[in-house]
Image (cartoon, rainbow, N blue to C red; front, side):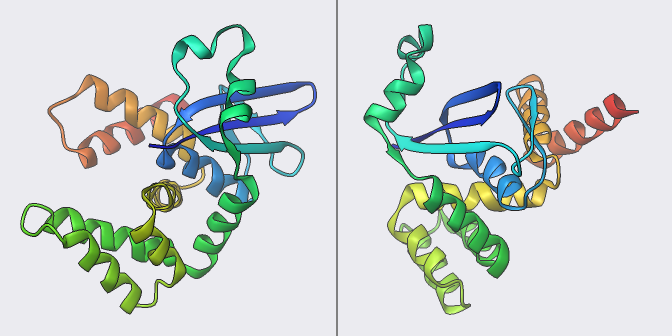
Amino acid sequence: MSKYHVEVREFPRNVNRFNMSGQEVGAVLVAWAQERVFELGGQRWNPQSAEMTVIEGPEIPVSGLSMGRGWPAALREGLDVTERVLGEARAAIVDGSVARIAQAQEAEELAGAQAPDAATEAAAAAIDEGAGEAAVAAVGSPAADELALGVELAALLGGEAPRLLAAWREVAARASGLSPSETLALAERQLRDQDA
C-alpha cells in the first residue's frame, strides 16, 4: 500500500512528514488548495509563500528516517505527485464530487457485511449521481479512494483540520470505548478549552 511523504518549505525552515495516509495528507491538501494557513509539524504554514512537495511511494521504515535519510529515500523510491493530488483536491472542492464519494463509502460501510460487491455498487451509485471521474478513480485505485476520503474529511473538519485531527487522534487513543463521533466531540471541546 502506498504512503504519502510531504515536505513543506518556507526559507529558512522546512518540515517533512512521512508515511502519511490519504486522510492525513488530504487535510493538508485541502488547506493548501483553499490557500488557508495550516499547521504541520508544530508550525504554521502559508501556502501563498511556502512550497510543498508530495511524494507517493512505499512506506519508509523508522530505521530509514534517522539522520536525515528519510527525504532522500522518499525521493529515490517514490513518485512526485504534487501537481496531481493538488489538482484532485481543487477539483473535488469545486465540483463537490468528494462529498458524493464519501456518501458512497458510507453506503459501502453499511452494506459491507451484507454483500461482497457493496463497494462496487456504492461507487456505481455515485457515478450515476454524477460523481464523474473522481468516483471512477475511487473504484479503480485504493490510493485515490483514500485521498478523496482524506480531502472530504478535511473539508468537513473545517479551517483547522490538521489541529482537530491531531486532537481527535489523541482523544481516541485515550477513550477507546467511545464512538468516532463521541471522540470528535471531545476533541472539539478540548480545542475550545485550549483556545479560551
